[in-house]
Image (cartoon, rainbow, N blue to C red; front, side, top):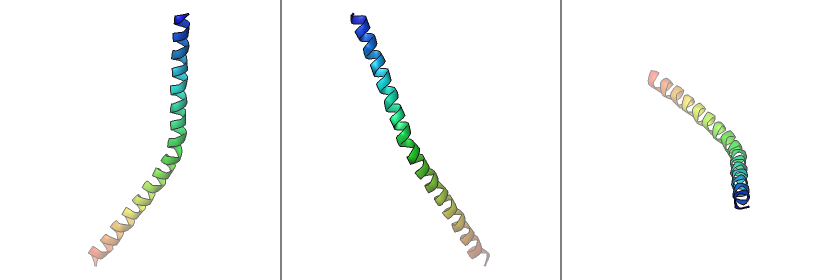
Length: 59
C-alpha cells in the first residue's frame, strides 16, 4: 500500500516535471523568434555601420 502510494507520487511528480518542461518550451519558442529577429537586425546594423566607416575612411 505504501509502496503503491509512493510509486503514484513519483509518477505524478514526473508528469508534473514533463508538463513544466513543455510549458517552458512553448514559452521559449516565441522568445527565440524575437531573439533571432533582433540578432538579424543588429547584424545588419553592424554591416551598414562598417560600410559607412569604410566609405568615410577611404575618402
